[in-house]
Structures are given as C-alpha cells and as structure tokens.
Length: 349
Ligand code: ADP
Ligand code: MG
Image (cartoon, rainbow, N blue to C red; front, top):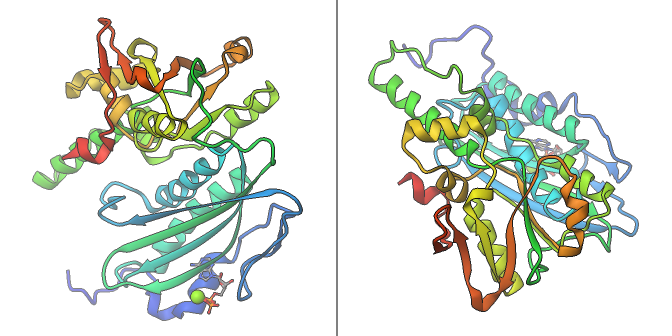
C-alpha cells in the first residue's frame, strides 16, 4: 500500500494544525470540581484548594516501552493512562481532581486515532470525577509519548505515606494480584502467533478477566471510601504497580521495618491460577513480581483488626516486623525466603 493512499474517514493531523487539534480533542471536556476555577483555554489552569493538602503525581508513557499498540486499543490506552495516575493519588488516601496531559505524536496517527485516545481519557475522567484542565501538544518524529500529571487533595490528618508502618501492623491488600501480568502474557503470546502467521485468529476467548486487568485496570477509589467509612486510616500505603514484592520493600525501607508475608494468604483469582498453570508460572511469583494490578497495599495497627475483618475484598497477608527480622515470604511449605524486588521488566527479559 502506497504511503499516500488515503484512508476514508482519516483526517491528517496537518489538516487541523495544533490549535484545531486541541479544540477538537478537548471540545467535550466537562468540569466536575469546584476546585477548578479555570480549565483548558488560558495560559494556565487556575485551581482553588482552600486549606487542603495538594497531591501531585506524574507518569510518562513511551510507545514500544510502556505500551504496544499492536494489542492496545487507543481508547483503552487513554483510560489506563489516566487511571494509573488516579491510583497514585488514592494511594496517598487522597482524591484526584485535575489532570494535565502532554502528548507528542507523529503524523502516523490520524485525528480520529487521537480522538479515540481522548475518548478513553474522558471516560476515565468522568468516571472518577477528574477535570482535564490543560496540556501541551507537540509532534514527534516517530511514536507516541504521553505525559499525564494528576493533582489531588487530601485532608491534613488523613494523608498516608509509605513510611508509617510499625512492627506488628497488619499488612493488607485489596482485590487480587497477578492477573494483569498474566493478561500481558496472553497478549504477547497472541501477538507472536499473529506475527508468525497473520491468518491465525487471536485466541483471546475465555481470558476476559486477565485481559481486562491488563488493558482496563481500575483505581481503587472504592477501597479508599470503604476504609474511610470503617474509620480506618492506614499507617502506610502504596499502590501495586510493580508487583507486591517491590511495593512491600518500599514500605519496609521507608518505614525502617521488616515484614513477614504468607504465600498462602496472597489473593489470586481462579482465572489467574488457570493461566499460571498453562504458562508454567508459580502463581505467587506472578503476584509478587508481575505488575500493573493497581491494587492497594497498606498496613493497619493490630487494634484495627476487627474493623478490617468485615470488609469485602481485603486480604490480610502478613505483618510488619522489626527491621532486624528481615523482609520475608513464608512459603506454603513453611520456608522463609527473603523478598526480592525484581519488578516486572526483569521478569520479561
Ligand atoms: P501555550 O501556547 O500557552 O502552551 P497551547 O496553545 O499549547 O498554549 O494550549 C492552549 C490551551 O489548551 C491551554 O489551556 C493548554 O493547557 C490546553 N492544551 C494544549 N494541548 C492540550 C492537549 N493535548 N490536551 C488538553 N489540553 C491541551
Ligand atoms: Mg502549549
């Protein structure tokens, strides 16, 4: 196919120009928060947070490194790119309020493709009540780069850091782990199969749960609300983006503690277990060293045990110890293994 061949319904970026593109992409943006005084359209957004603590977080995503457009629909990419930032704000026990997005795109992308991406962003913003208040748009030689900054708020006495865990605190995790990583393995397997024989249809059937975990993760706003309603303020908290092991080490390092986590207590969905069998991966390894589950890992004082017990979807997986006791996994056959942070990139290579 010649490179100049026109695709019906494809609008070239050059047809709109930068300002036309910005207008088109941001035409239907809605404002949800009273803290947003001025959104898109001026030289800077104007925010009014009264007396609240302000939380700021950013994520940078590079095509080919952080996402693969061979199997990531642009709408899902937009959704996920926003949600992973919201997750960071919830991990501080805060609420995300505003989002700023910078994109750098090559002319390989059409206006319609970028609109798909913005559709996903908008769905995430509307769902989580976040206002898109600005951004920047540049062209790139090749590839798609996305930088998203999210601003949030927290109550002064409710903000939760990574460094507050104390010996004997219970270690809790929301939802289940390892699913997003198994979803990635399924997608990469099907991509390989497709590249070696394009006639083969992808075998994605029956893997809905893990694919959704990978392609359309949610941030656990519901968990933050549930903890609030139960009168629990975690002593430390982090979201699970790099795998349980890595996040546990962050909490322990910053809190100056050790930990004891029980392999048998790590929550893993049956769909994830089945795929682990298929791929010959130990399920707890997928949970500990896989990534992108975007669940919350937090610690609570032992005195909150009663309160946490009744909460759905929360698992107590171990406890915080003195630093001298080390950071350990207690395996199903009662062996003590020091936790190691591999991160999920390591697993892939
Ligand atoms: P400036 O010249 O000050 O950088 P721009 O023309 O880039 O201004 O942006 C005009 C307005 O549009 C600003 O409010 C900016 O935040 C917003 N904006 C620019 N690019 C994007 C984008 N890709 N997505 C959302 N908002 C954008
Ligand atoms: Mg600009």
